[in-house]
Length: 294
Length: 129
Image (cartoon, rainbow over all chains, first blue to last red; front, side):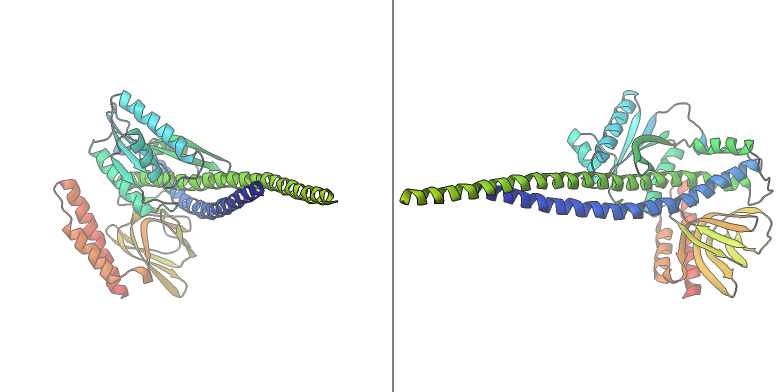
C-alpha cells in the first residue's frame, strides 16, 4: 500500500504546482496585453516627435544639438541595466544580466569610469552575489513603468551628460520585436544619433513642402525636442522591457504547466499499476489462504 | 478641424473641434479652422478645446503644438483633466518649487521654470474650483 500512497501524494503536490503555474501563466497573459497596449499608445508620441524633427529639417534648419554630437573622447559611461523585479520568467533576467555584466567588464577594461545603474530586484541580487558595485538602483518599475518615473531618471542622466560627467549612456534591455521575437540588446541612447539620421532621410524625400510659422523660433523648438526624444527613447526601453518580461514569464509558465501535465499523466499510470498489483497481491493472498484451509 | 492631444503615455484627446485655445510659452494662442501651418512651444496653463457647443478644459505643461492641414496636434508631457486637479496639491507644488535650492545658473533656471509651472497650475486650479 505504501508505494501507491506515496505516488498519490506526489501526484497531488504536482497538481497543486500545476494550478499555480497555470494561474501565473494567465496573469502574465493579462499583464502582457496591458503592457502591449501601453507600448502601442506610447508610440503615438514618438512618431509625432519624429515627424516634427522632419518638419524642422525641411524648414531648412540644421539639426544640431549638444545631445546629438559624438564626443571625441569617451571617458565615462552610464550603463543602465533593465531587469525584472521578480523571477520565474525563464532566461529573461539571466540573458540581460550576462550581457550587461560583459559590457561592464569591457567598459572597465577600456579604462572608463562607469556609472552602473540597475533596475529590478533580480539585477540587484545578481550583482550582490558577484560583488559588483551598483551606483544607482531602482525597483519602482513593475510591469507598469510610468513616464513620470522614467522622466526623473532621464532628467538625471541629461544633467550629468550636459555637465560632462558622463560622455555616453547605454541601456541593456530586452527589445520587443514581435510576440515570438524578443532579444537582449545594448542600445546607445546618448549621444542621440537617430534624430540626425531621420533628418537626412527626410530631406531626401522632400514631400509636400509646408511653410511653418515657428513660435518662438525653430532653434528654440529643437532645443526642447531633442531632450524629449531622448526621454521617449528611454521610456520606450522600459516599456519594451516590461512587455518582454511578461512574454518571457508566460512562456516559462506555459512550459512549466505542460511539464506538470505530462508528469501527472505518467504518475497516474504508475499509480494505477501499483494499485492494480496491490489488489492482485491481496486476491492471491486471500485465494491461497482459502485453498490452504481446504 | 481635428484636435489630437498626446502625452508620452497615450493619446488623451482625439476630437473634432471648432476652436482651440492653448497656452504657449509667452501667452495664450488661439487656433481656428484653416489656421496657417505653425509649430509652437507650449508653456503651462489651461488648454480649451471647443467642440461645438461644449468646451473641454485641461491643464497642460510643456511640449509642442503643430498645426498643419486641418489637424492640430498637441504633444505635451503632462495633462490633467478638469476634475483631477486639486488646488491644495497645486499650492503644495508651488511651495516645493519655491523651496528648491539653486546654487548655479542652471539650477536657477530649473527652479524658475518649476515655479512658473506651479504658478500656472495654481491659477488654473483656482479658476476651476
